[in-house]
Amino acid sequence: MPSKDRIAYFYDGDVGNVYFGPNHPMKPHRLCMTHHLVLSYELHKKMEIYRPHKAYPVELAQFHSADYVEFLHRITPDTQHLFADELARYNLGEDCPVFENLFEFCQIYAGGTIDAARRLNHQLCDIAINWAGGLHHAKKCGASGFCYINDLVLGILELLKFHARVLYIDIDIHHGDGVEEAFYFTDRVMTVSFHKYGDMFFPGTGDIKEIGEREGKYYAINVPLKDGIDDASFTRLFKTIIAKVVETYLPGVIVLQCGADSLAGDRLGCFNLSIEGHSECVRFVKKFNLPLLVTGGGGYTKENVARCWTVETGVLLDAELPNGRRAGGHWSVGPSIGRAGLVRSSSVEIPDNEYAKYFAPDYTLKIQNGNMENLNSKSYLSTIKVQVLESLRCIQH
Ligand code: ZL4
Ligand code: CA
Ligand code: ZN
Image (cartoon, rainbow, N blue to C red; front, side, top):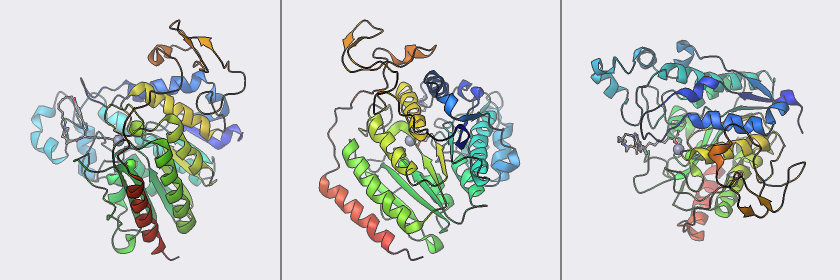
């Protein structure tokens, strides 16, 4: 177990109190649920918890255009009807609505990722976690796909002040287009995104042939996948590619976007990963023992998001949770009567807390299997792997 001060965890209770609107898939309340679940497992005793600073407009403008930042700062739900042109220009609307306290929300999640990068830069921790961050679609001059400010790009720019090479890995089911685009022409950041590709799935980019340009050629990697990918196929492909990437690129620091919409049963997703499969990727990345910045991202079945990021907090702390993978310690294991009064076998209930009701009826960290066909054939996955590894062979340091 690492000493408590080596893991920095960023959280602001205000971040979960914003509302994107009726039926909007993005529910920041999942961040409160995650935090309460982390507390109920007493994981806060094994890491330092910080409230992030609210990033200043000039910090946001390190990547974004000053006019866009200024507009985000100024616009409110009451005044938006006066700014139809600007709303269209900055892509604000149905996916990216203007809501109460929008700018403060951006300042908090971006502040968390920037603070995380700064603590890593000064070697004040080995791993920094910001589950509110990971909003990978935001562009220099506008919002996209529920993302307004690209905290990942801001965090990476901060890391580049101290590190020659930054590796960005993205396991959200959507293509990490905003981060890729920001660093498409440089070899100082390698971006690797695993995502669903095809059938017009958002954002529509991330073909395997997108590899970067000019100085950045071969430094963008895209792993396009079909519906229903399972733990075995995903983790095998992930480990093969990431091991080769780290061996070839020799990054000084890794940024890992852990979007939980790649889990089975996600409201927007179509993959079939369990929490074990998803968190196995986190465990694998941690094992390189490089400074690591971990963020959230998508995730639209909010009980599963909270379960996943809690288990992954445990993985990063070397404090594996019962049902996260291995059972052990003082947790009760074995046949039990659930809170719902059902007899179950080999289940471990999450510790009781004021948020426990969200995890009914089983009250465990397990999620429902998607029961889906894996449309990624062995030969398809093998072709993808071969193409990525071939592209990596073109890099010569
Ligand atoms: C919704 O029900 O594919 C937004 C968005 C709001 C409530 C109001 C209904 C009005 C699904 C999505 C209709 C809204 C239709 N409401 C929005 C091409 C689209 C154009 C916009 O995980 N319409 C755009 C974005 C994706 C598109 C995914 C993932 C983020 C991340 C990191 C972003 N956009 C079609 C959709 C609803 C809504 C229901 C929705 N939007 C599903 N997928 C999208 O990678 C955080
Ligand atoms: Ca992705
Ligand atoms: Zn996503």
